Amino acid sequence: MDTQLAQNTAARKERLIALRRRKEAHEKGESVNATFTFKQRNFDPETRQARKAGIAEETVEKEVEGLAEEIVREDEERRAEELDLFNIQPRRPNWDLKRDMTARMGKLERKTNESIATILRQRLRDQRGVAASEQVNLVAGIREAEAERDRAVASDEDSE
Image 1 (cartoon, rainbow, N blue to C red):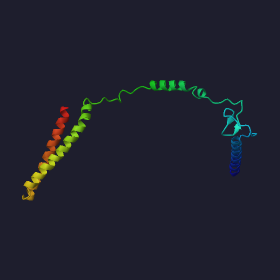
Image 2 (cartoon, rainbow, N blue to C red; image 1 turned 90 degrees about the vertical axis):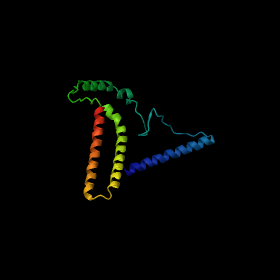
Image 3 (cartoon, rainbow, N blue to C red; image 1 turned 60 degrees about the vertical axis):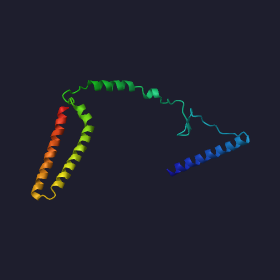
């Protein structure tokens, strides 16, 4: 591996020196016996060798030769598979209404929470001096307010 690397390095140095000499000679206007340079059509840059005339080159036409037939065959196979109609479920009739109402319901939810908090503050203010047994009524009132809110939301969804 190291010998191959050293050989590649030496070959590169020689090419660079030759290139530098040709460039200097060209700037001075002198003619230099330059070595033959390969053109890309006859030269393989990977192997740095001349391409052999007997080898056929790969073309795009050869690469895509059977591609059209393969695509047609795959399409026919997909169409041959039956669609299972029992697994298809229709959407509910009101799916679009629910989608449109989510933004409005978000605003309503926020306002509902704010009103519940206001009611709680008022009741706490009213009951500050009241005994602990009456505070249980406060919890019951909160639960009733939440139940009323849930009923209102359910009736709004049913009316849609």
